[in-house]
Length: 528
Image 1 (spheres, rainbow, N blue to C red):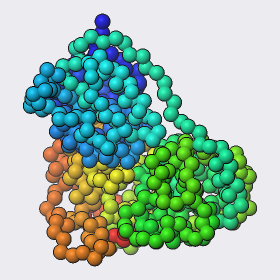
Image 2: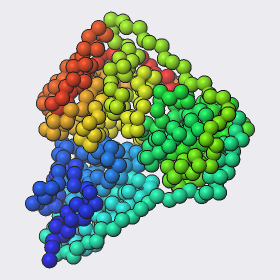
Image 3: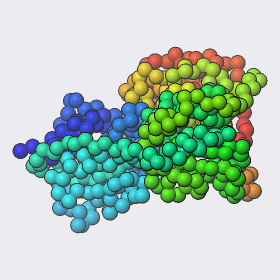
């Protein structure tokens, strides 16, 4: 009879989860024993980096990925990026070792107390198998659960002495999770769009997750609807260079409603209604505006602040709406967002000049990963994502996602170039991923924006009318030396005349990662 380990690997193989991201510990070594030759193990030097890399790999492949971390302390290290994976709707199967079963009652060293509870509520399912023989089936169930909309991470706690027990084969099944939205509700939306004088679409991460990028463009062009990006989407949702694109909605209630003024019908695709951050009370939507939401997440539907919500697959909904509406609309083409002015080149490097120069030099099919909250407004102004999967940002608001996610994305998408723009403060959260990128010759590009402060927090302090806040300045970080210490090619630039050459050197770099530290002039970003 086969062992639990053999059957577990058979299940993972049948499900296509043959690339494992991990940081091993003593509790996990028995699982990794006699590691199969057809599997790939991607080592990360800290668990947050491990989960972030797996998140990026899963975002690119659109498939569940296995992550192996070290019992309770390792999962604790990983939790910041587990939370981000939850909000990114990333299907990760996260496993952690547990002590030998005979030692659980005595709570031996490295015992995981209430292991199933530790990652809650930021996993869809959490389980510690009652019997060793249940592990293969638990892995299969974890996969089905992670992949079922709304997708997200799951967790398994696996005792270290289970792997050599005998086990029966586990049948791997297909679970198809797409559900069609109610056709009568879609006919109502189509009729309101047909009658509308000035419709608007709000696009969220669910558009691209469902594979509806091209469908969304077709529906927008078919209806001549103005298209707004949702406040916090986590990824590109619509080509930002398109003439129908209006920009991104703010994450403050009153201001958001003001942006939607003049639209009599608003349809939100694959996004919450709405994701707020700043407290700015007011109307959720303008007067005389009718709002509809289409989402695959019942939670998003239940907590929406306004409108009619329809639950179902976003791509199927858009396909239906396309078939229900006239092929062309007679309403006027809405005015697009204004063209941004070209920034003036000075001696130092302004944030605007950096983002303008980088946006102009990047290839159109590049993937941009963002963890630069103090300069995000400028980056989104001067760099337009024009393709599916062209832009990613943490959907949770937590730091430490972008740098490792860029490694996972580049491994999964070797034909596209991944550029990660990250602040000097943000870079400190998961910088261990540089080691992995070096060891696997992953040619990801890092642009570290050095402003030596948490400028976004200073802006938030001004917005909240608070002062005297400590800890908002962070001088003395030498990211270049840290990167070089892990074997990564790295250099710095602080003059605008030298910026294009420094960036081109990184863009031309092929053998492993490259890091450019750019010292920029200080600025306080606008929150609205």
